[in-house]
Image (cartoon, rainbow, N blue to C red):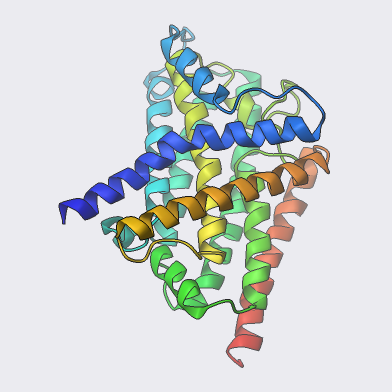
Length: 316
């Protein structure tokens, strides 16, 4: 029993340790595709370490909420990551690996980062918070609709059991899964602040969403928020990879199965990182008023997936 819990803890720590590496991989591939000099794969680790060593500067009117928010954001994102199976399925955390729990943890992190952006009272912080809540209000229903499409086939909202159902069903082309996966990809782009919804590398105040909310943060507070953003990116990529393409994930907790699961998820995340870069480099940043239509398309794809399951796959 202790060994099983150790594997569960190690799987969660893989999110913490591997998220900056995935962010570095995405940035490196993007630089190569744009014919620019690329930083090291380990540059995000250096950035986080540098921020952790720096002194934290706070605004004079910052309340306890502003100081507490980075820790809550990091903790909620980490708990959300612990819910999503990464390498293995049959773990103690599988009991709480529910789609509703996942959405709740992500909503908690969003709520606190929006409050932190409003707390100091700057114009850019308020603008970023309002945009973030607008995106969240549209993205969360699409996310739940996507997971519910898979849950209807697996007859459960438990992510571990849904992945196990897809794994045991074999390579079956399900139209509902195709629509749901496309919808989840669009949601992941919006939720992680990537192009065309947001640009994590921008410093143009009028177009920022995520960066506008954290302009007043420095030092270890900023490090925790950036780290949480990297974990969130890895979480969504893992959800896409293991929910719709779970082959390779460990069912039995043997050394060989765990090693295979680790190699499989590394390969899938690397491939999804390349797909994300190709998506970003082929599109331009859209205007803010076009974001609802973008997320509406994600919801529509997820809804089509659910209707396709009802009409074609169940004969309803």
